Image (tube, rainbow, N blue to C red; front, side, top):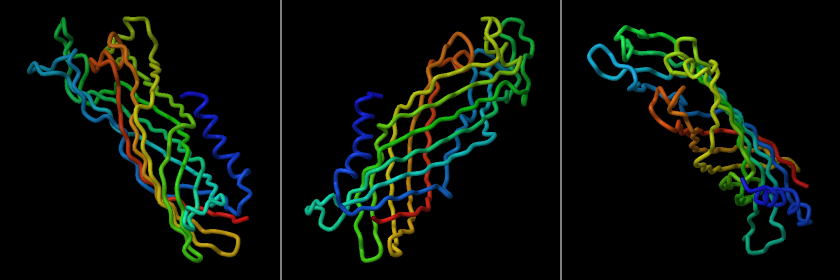
Length: 261
């Protein structure tokens, strides 16, 4: 991510509220419930190994555990701009942290490509796949006060940076069948996931109690990440592919508090 874009976004969040000298409020929201799509890859064909009937060997990547947390910090103000029609501009930071683990197993009997002997049976563990990541976005939105209440919404722009790790821990058998042992590689395969697409929108509702606000927020996040693969060994050799891609959609219900000053 271009550093100048990050710095510009940080300036928008920090300096604009200070420069406005206008009445405003600070809000904090934290995710309390929601749903997250299943990150498992499901059933896969392994063309380098055959079954007794000559068809490709099969394997499955099944979810073991996952976690998701998120929060947002917003500044809301009209910045003294009359054309907003009584509404206010919302600027802030949105961050989410996600992690999951899946287990990879054979789902059929695999035969050795030369000797024809069985090398993997249905249910045999091959590996576990662990992923974790953090994404930070710039929230931009509009809030309209209605008496003691307020309604609003906006979008998140992924310009504040992200990071992620993806590791495959092979069993001794999995390391051998994926050709990592022959290549002199250990049982830990580290991949480098990169974000390919991101979109997010949010809706918020507030109720004022003197200088404070009680907040309810709904947010949807859709993203796609991909990691390059080496087709000579490891996951790339198993899938006969040079990229491992996954998409997810998450919805969140957040509760929060705000303070008007």
